[in-house]
Image (tube, rainbow, N blue to C red):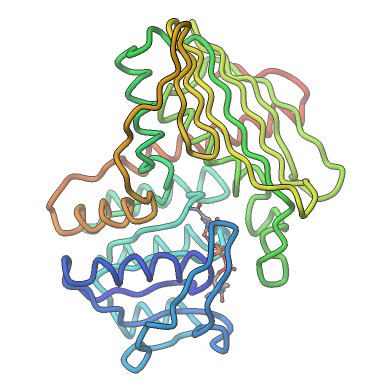
Amino acid sequence: MRYAILGFGGLGKLHTVNLELLKKEYDLTLAAVCATDPSRVRQNVSLNLGDVDISGLDFSSIAIYTDYKTLIDEVAPDFVISTLPTYLHAEAAIYALSRGIHVFSEKPMALTLEDCASMADAAKKSCAHLLIGQCLRFDPTMQYLKNCVAEETYGRCYRAEFHRYSQTPLWTKNNWILDPAQSGGCIFDMHIHDTDLINWMFGMPHSLTSAMTKAKVESESIFTQYRYENLLVTSAADWSLTQTFPFESRALLCCEHAVLDAKNGVLTVYQDDKVLTPEIPSGDYFMREMQAFLDTVTNRASAPFSPDDVLNSTRLAMLEIKSAESALPVIL
Ligand SMILES: NC(=O)c1ccc[n+]([C@@H]2O[C@H](COP(=O)([O-])OP(=O)(O)OC[C@H]3O[C@@H](n4cnc5c(N)ncnc54)[C@H](O)[C@@H]3O)[C@@H](O)[C@H]2O)c1
């Protein structure tokens, strides 16, 4: 399969490194990349997730484009990995899907419900697949937590807490990530990971209440209570923090017989009489989501989840903003 990377920045390069490792297994050829600044194409990148080294990539047979539509028309790849800035996710995915090209599109799905619905519709009308890169659904630790909730492994989960704290992200070109019109701000760029985990683990709540701050940058934080029949979930997301503050994420599940605490992805289970560290399958979630996408497009497996399911996570984020802006609870 010939593929192209639309948006060859941090995430585009990270996925390329993983696809290169999967090249033989799936018979892959990187045909083209698209970036607005071709002088940066060959550069390695440092992300808050770690360094990405693309120095081993042979560019001699990789076409470089600055316009993704021209790339799609001229190269006609079998699939594209879309890691464009968020405001372009919907139009790029729809453009490729309508030409029968499979699409892996980074999170967040899109910045409006209408755009998410158009993407989901385009996938339904196309013979090609669309997978949204809600990468934490592929994290073995998060899969373990979801399974414990469903199976009541440690009894019923009656309270859960998710948080994600970050220094203000200053690493994108012209700070596009800080512009809510381009990235959706903290809520759509960072908090969407937790919104999506909550939707995926517990489904949609029957009501929610949110509040936001706006001290340093637009859309810098959000704090929410999600109410379910017999469960209270809370979340906090804040990227207004100082540059030396270390990134921190946490998913805490209070169950009848244990507290499950995943801090920065490391899980500990606290019971009354003992502390456990369950054996979690190894594997990087970015690699696992690429494998799941490739298995789907080669018909080795069915799609792990639908675009419509991820659309609900966007719906949840939208309702959080509505509640915060109106200072009122929202009943779903
Ligand atoms: N799954 C995750 O945990 C995760 C982490 C980081 C970023 N992301 C997502 O990945 C996406 C990209 O983020 P990034 O950090 O890689 O950004 P980035 O700024 O590093 O890269 C964006 C790339 O898109 C190109 N580009 C910009 N405008 C373009 C245009 N009009 N036409 C064609 N190319 C254009 C740029 O040249 C650059 O190569 C965002 O949607 C972000 O939310 C996901």
